[in-house]
Length: 446
Image (cartoon, rainbow, N blue to C red; front, side, top):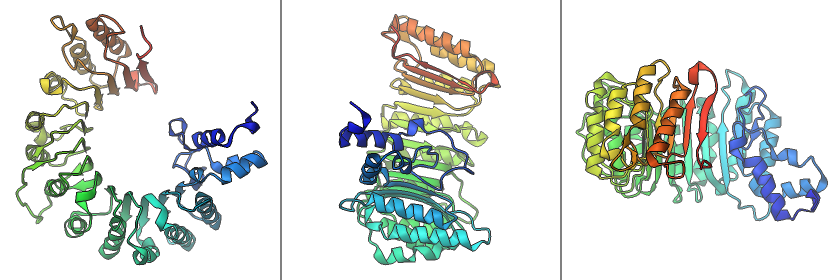
C-alpha cells in the first residue's frame, strides 16, 4: 500500500509519533531553536507535515492532537506570536475542546519593549483558551505581572490538572493572585512551585491557597523541614509523589515550631535532591512513616558532614518503621563503605532499581569494593548476597568498564545462568574519562 493511500487513523498515528516521540529528540542549539514547538528540544514540527502534499496538509491541520502541546520559548517577535496563534487555532479544530498543554518561558527584556509586548500578546491568546488548559508551565519575570490580570477575572478554571511556575522578582500580590487562579480548578492534581518563592511567601501565601487535600503530586524548589512536614500532614490521604530540590535549614528569626509525626498512607515516591544544614534532614526522616513508599531518591546523599552522622540511621529507622517494600533507590555521596553495609540490610531486599550518582571516577578502590559486594554470591540460596532482586543498575562516573562486566557475569553465575538472572540492564557513564557510556541490555541473553 502506498503511503498516500493509508487510512486516516494510521496516518494520524504516524504523524503523532513524528511530532511527540520524545526518546528520539536530540539536543538543539538554543540560538537556532524554533520559538514555537511541541517541546523545548524538538527537531520535529507539525508545520513541516503540511508542506509535503495536499493530503498531508489537510490531514495534519485537522488533527488537534498534533498542535495541542505547545512550547513557547522566549517569544521575541510578532512572527512568534502569529505562530503561537496558529497552533492554538489548529489545536481547537473540530469541537474546540481538545485539552492544551502549554509551556511558556518569558524572554528577559533587558529594557527592550518588543519582547515584553510580544510575550503579553502570547499570554492574552493563551488566556482566551483557558477553558482548555490541562497542563501549564510558566517561567516569568516581574514585568509580566499585568498580562495575567484578565485571568483572575475568568477564574475559576475548570480543566487544569497541573501547573508549574517559576518566578523572577514578582511581588507578593501578583504571586498570590496567580496561584489562587490556578488553584481554583477542581481538577487540579499536580503543583510545582519553583524559584522565586521565599520562605516568608511559603508561610504566608501558599499554605492558605493550595488545596493540599486534593493533590497527588508536589514539587518544590526549596522548603524548610517544618513547611515540608506541614504540607505532608495536610495531604496525608492523597499525596503520592513529592520532590524537593533543597531542604533548607530555618533562617534566623523564622519559626522553630516542633515537627509533628506524620503517616503518609499513599506516598509512593519521595525525592530530596539536596540537604543544607543536614541535621534537620535526619529529624525530618525521624518524623515520617511511609507504608506505601516504593521510590526514594537522594541524588546528593548525605554529603553534609552534619547529616552523615545520623543520616543512614534515620533512613533505616524510617524504612523499618514504615514496613515498606522499597523498589527504587538513588543515592549520591562517596561514603561507599557505609553504602555497602546498609544496602546489605534486609530493608533493601526488595530493591529492583539502583542508581548511584556519586563521582566514583576518582575513587576506583571504592568502586571496586562496591562491585565486589554486588558480585558476592550466597551459596545457600543460589542468588547474590546483596540486592538479590536487582534488575536495573545505573552507575554514574565510574572508572572501569571491565570490572562492571565482571560483576554482571558474577551475578549471572550466582543464579545459574542468563535465563535465571534478575539483572536486566546496566548503564555506566563517563568510563575512563571518555564521553561514552557502557550500556548492557541483558533481556535477550540466553
